[in-house]
Image (cartoon, rainbow, N blue to C red; front, side, top):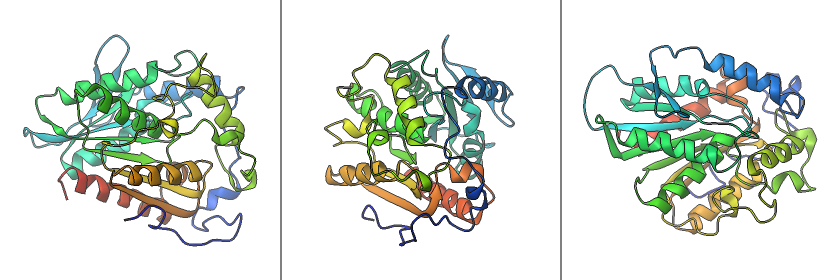
Length: 311
């Protein structure tokens, strides 16, 4: 399906999907320089709780993965590596427990959520290298078919997943079969664009975006960044795995995600763009019970099932 078509319908300016009832109450930004520290500690505490139905594996001194396996013990299973969001600043691998558990149960895949180190203490390339360590671990598992591994991520995790696809292509050791990018954070220039209407945003603002990118890029020149740090600024997108990109129209990342989907298609990479009218950033996390969120998650699972040969 061509980018920009699936799920798209015109909506009035500033009109949120009526099924997303929290939109009227949520702030325009949650992560700020003053809240990042407490939120990082809080999500770290949540992430320390062992996964229900899964295991925590220490890959090396710095990287762990939360792993979910299907009940039936078979070999040559498909795999999924999940990368959590949080603006590169907060979050934990436990944020992927629900999706990974569901993928293991419904698709019969080995699903792992990687715990990567966070900015600003660990700027690029450390988080990306941690994710590559998780991918390499998954590909080396004896019950995983390394040719059927999908990489998935939400928000900053989606940006890392996109960058991981580029890094894997560059190194040539592992060839992911699919990339599932949920409202990915792809372009450090978005927060500086003057056409962004803050009234349409929830959870993640232009100011949050600038703070997240500054923290992740560290000492790198903001206008001359390493290509792997900012996928939207990478010149060559050819030869990447097929992609599914989902984003809401009231998400700060909407325009950059639509543009990235088009660039993938123009580079010959099969890409499905799923646009959700009236949806704000991370709507499916804040209102997971909403019909809109459930429909979004179903589309993700359909895309994964088809990509991993589990449909």
